[in-house]
Length: 605
Image (cartoon, rainbow, N blue to C red; front, side, top):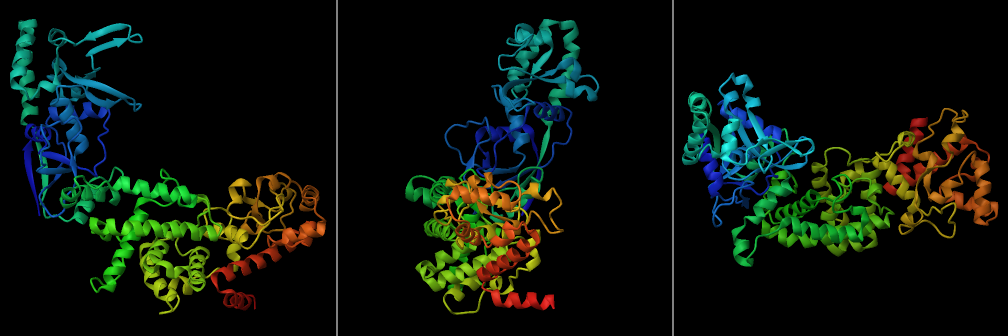
């Protein structure tokens, strides 16, 4: 239930000052700049609509850790009666500018931090309302305006006499009747004939408007669910960054009184996640740095989703719910007790995932085909434990993984696939059921090779990793096959076999030139020698390797390349042969070599 009331601005700001109105800890920091603050002050002085403010009554089952609005320093540690869900920027700006006896901490148009006092020009304020924006001005913390690189003082408001002489009323006094009267006396005394009438108009048109100004406030009942709070917050903040479930849980866990009473401190979810991610990223770079974005490695929401998958799996096995799930509601309903219990298990599971990926020759975050596929993989490891260590189990998990990558099954909406894969992969590994849908439904059409041209494709990254995994030897460092430990050491990347310069002479024969078929994993040092026609650069590579040409041919074949086609500069023959070998490599990894080859031959017929 929710109620809508009109509350006097003075009463709202008084609640901010006393701590009766606070922010839930998931709210981001106040950040309005000087221009926006002056604009909202003008709005209030004109009694224009401010917009609805939304609050949540405290005392319900869902408890959030709260904090005061920026600038509020109430005595003691008061309990909040209301939590501000929408209106932080507006109310914080007004609180600091109209209530606090201190300069406002804000920023200029370039984002540079500044301190400002806010004033209203009395003469301009009693003029046309269209001039009100110009009537509101701000001055530095010392209340002195200077020009000429701060060498010339043009306005000194550091004393009441200076303010009165300039006709500028300090807005932070507006709700303090006693100080307003004192300032009024000084103002009229400065020029009684002129200022008496001006003050009367100013008091009527500005001060009374501000004192009577009302804020429309929606109060959500304390019984409002956490999911509803999250949904409401996102709807009313459409212009900002969507609310992160992790931030919401951070405030919820910190507000867990039972935990505080038991441990003497609140639960610090961000710190727990930071330690977990640092431990994982330090050992497995493929999981991404702590400061990496959502697309470059494991993030906090991934971790929560994996925990939710395991928890709902447990609940399903116990008959407490119908299906495995990791939707937002499942994350919001994740009790602190279960998070504390399951997070170490999932941290270990993601460490196993890092080792699994290394065995697939995927060790760098940029080479990871799908970050999202790691979520159900970690959940399955946490559920099955050491069962996944057997050769048969790992073989099935590898097949599922490569079907997901090469079949490009994790490119769209993933939450449904997460849950289905966990529910199907676990019994398949246990020999209790058929292969998961991700395995059964995955296909790799042979002409897809022609269109895999960049790292934007998961299958592109997958084939790159498979070439390393199946034993590709570098063309400069030829002593042993490439391995995960050498990728960074040798600056290994995807390099073109037939160089771009060679195609400028019209040698493409109508075939794709930048697809994965014409690329292979090689060191930067090898790529330095690969200029001109292949027949030309091969002689350079053979000489630098101190190998016989026929031995170097064996090195080329580790990349699934026909040496004779390469030495003959025969791109059509090279492309056809390598396409066939890459198809075999892909189909083998997916466990579908025979089925897909038969389908391809059927299409050809």
